[in-house]
Image (cartoon, rainbow, N blue to C red; front, side, top):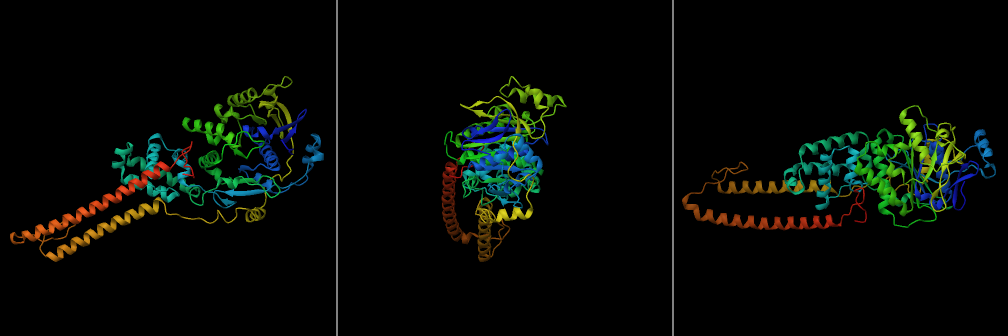
Length: 519
């Protein structure tokens, strides 16, 4: 399965292994549906866990939950082990696992805050155009300047209403802010809420360090995200996983090239990340993938077709497992050719032809060795997994969740004072001030008893010539009171601006626009 410094993948004309010291140079698992990609992901997760490396993976079909239970002897598994000379080392065992679920149904709830997601990823999630994304950036800038915390869905909604109310004022400060764009964003929020996207935002937010745990026996914890329901909203799935990757980059310290990764992150259905993504986002993803290696994090993309991954990202993926591809269409043929050309050639192997001939559980394997040089590509029989093939039962899942080291923490939600409450408090205070002014005008009108209509519709006395001194005296008192109120109001506004500015300066956003927790 794994030695002190390698993970056993399978056997070609020799044993094919993945060197742990080079595992943070990232990787790619590709192949058509039903060719064995999930099993390849499963055996790599087993190998990393056995080596003490925590793993995160999204479970699209439910099969990866089997990592938490020991496998059962089956003839075809035993035969594969014998064919590759693995029988003397092959055992069935369970691996320590923690289950997560955005919807809190099949694992611990997993959330983040609106501020931590940031405007770039939120715009991608809401499928906004450039103009609408600009308004969203103004919203975040205003929230930062005025010290308004954006934590959950209601904070975002109330902040949008606030921006709409102040559109004319904000246009002078930040550029054009149209109410039509705000309305479009509000409609997109409604669509996202119906898809369950509101579950993403709230507290307690995920502490990324909870992914980087080891079991008491030293094996790395396997974090499994239940993604079968999440996949019904592909854009939400892609943004959610990309946010987690960016969090790893922002939160973890630089460690260079460790002897083994600090965490390995498997991104299944990777094409969803890049489909219709704007160039600016792809550039940011490429930058994060390139730089996160120095944080000790290995990223492995899993997808059907190597053309699903942009070349700028593909060039960063040194460890490769290529299952069979079908060449039925011109695009399929281009994919086969592209996959073959990315491997280090093997003079004894027609790589392009072999890719279309591979059977289930076979793959072309090339991993980094020596000084980071890719090994010559080899046709390889992938080893059988030690954990269960297929999903665990609901009862087994409940037992695992309740015995988890984080059970009880994320299940209890909390609702801090944030933008929604602060804006509601401002509106309430404004109403109170208006009510006090109205009552004062009523008392004044009642006391004088002579009609003169004010702005609020009440009758005030019309002073005669004999009452002019009294009227002048009252005007002076009113002016002094107004001046005092103006000075107080100006002081409060100045303090609020000062607080907002200091908070705005303290807020630091990362590569993908998400707010850094330390700020």
